[in-house]
View 1: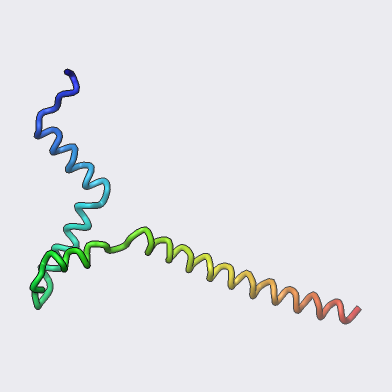
View 2 (view 1 turned 90 degrees about the vertical axis):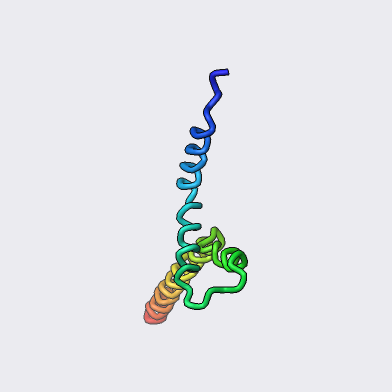
Length: 93
């Protein structure tokens, strides 16, 4: 029974886990946001539900895809320019 940990130890482990996972930051941000609202919403819990998401994996993926799209568009334009130049050079031969 060497795996026994007092409740305080388990609680502290859980708190560290929440901090590492970013949960504490997310909760703090949404609570500060609610505190700073000039007009407090009638349903604070609903406000938290709607605003807790913050940056999600989907948001990060969308940003990554937008960046990749911009890079691909730039490469396409570069290749089109090279193709036009190549075709112009071929026409003079």
